[in-house]
Length: 148
Figure (tube, helix red, strand yellow):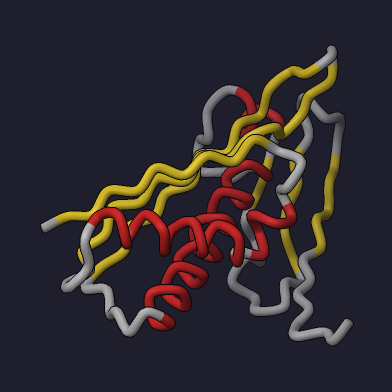
């Protein structure tokens, strides 16, 4: 194994899970420092705070974007635009709170490619995406639409 990169974030939590507050700090880039997370932002409404699921969705959509970009480049294709959304599901499974699915939705403008070839390349990206591989035990679905 050869490490490519490592990133760190520290969450400081105060109070009970239901009434408490978590705050991110010491993030490698500093971008997440000061963001807050609560149980209510996770399960009821955000109210300006984030959740583990939202952060995982950001990680999955951005990682998949990069993987798809790599795969398109391997086919000598250059996208005009890739809009990739991830919907991460927090559900009760066997009586336990579980993150059990991530649904990727893609809308892409890629000149010079037909839909069948595009769908094949999306499959290659799904196999390449490191976050998808991290989530391998979860249900991951990908729906891709080629525009134009």
